[in-house]
Length: 313
Image (tube, rainbow, N blue to C red):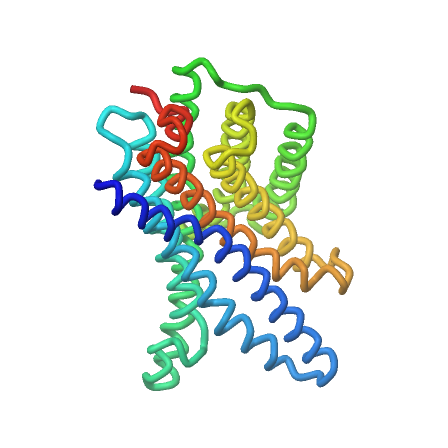
C-alpha cells in the first residue's frame, strides 16, 4: 500500500469511532423520544416504529461494518501471525451476527423493510415467524466463532509473555454473569416442566448462549488485562470495546430474563430494551480501533510492534 493510499484510508477509518458513538447517542435519544410519545399518547406505535426502522437498521449497519472492518484487519496481518486466524474467526462471527440480524430485524419483523410482507398474509405471517426463530439460532454460533478467535489472541499473549491476571473487579463481573447463568439453568433449563420431554435441537442450541457468554467474558477481560501496560491506546481500546460488548450482551440477556419474570420495575424495563444498541456499537468499535492502529503503524506514526501486539510471528 502506498503512503498516500494508507493516509487516505487512515483518515476514513479514524472518523468511524466518532461516527459510531454519535450514531448510538442519537439513536438512544430517538428511543427516549419514542418512549415519551408513547407515555403521552398511550399509542405503542411510536415504539414499534422506533424498533422496526431506525433500531433495526442500526443493528444491521453495525454488524455489516464489523464484518468489513474485521476483513480489513485480517487482510492486514501477514501469514504466520497468530492474529491473522484470530481476525478471520472474528470476521466469520460478525458475518453470522449479520445473518442473524437480517433474519431477526428485517425478515422477522412485520415492517415495510420486510419483502415478505408483500406475500399472501397467511404465508407472510408464517415466513416472518420462521425467520425470527431461525435468526435467534445464530446467536450461539457467532459466539462460538468469536470464542475461537479470542483463543488465538490469548495464545499470542502467552507466547509473547504478556498474559495478564484477573483483578477483583474482573472476578466480580464474571461472578455476576456466572451466577445469572447458573440461576437460569436451575430455573429454566432444568425446570420440572422439561422433565421427560424430548427437546429439539433449536432449544438446546439456544440454551448454549449463556455459557458461551461466560467464556467470552473471561477471554475478553483476560485479553484486556494482558494489554493493560499499553495504556488506553488504539489496540487496548479494541479489546476494551470487545469486553464491553460481551458484558453488555450479558446485561441485555439478564434484563430480558428479569423483564419476562416481572422482576424489573417499570423504570428499568425500557432500559433493558435499549441496552442492546450498546453492544452492537461496541462490536463495531473493536475492529475500527484495531484497523486504525495498523494503518497508523503502516505510516510510521506508531511502532508496528505496538499496533500488532500481541501478534506472534
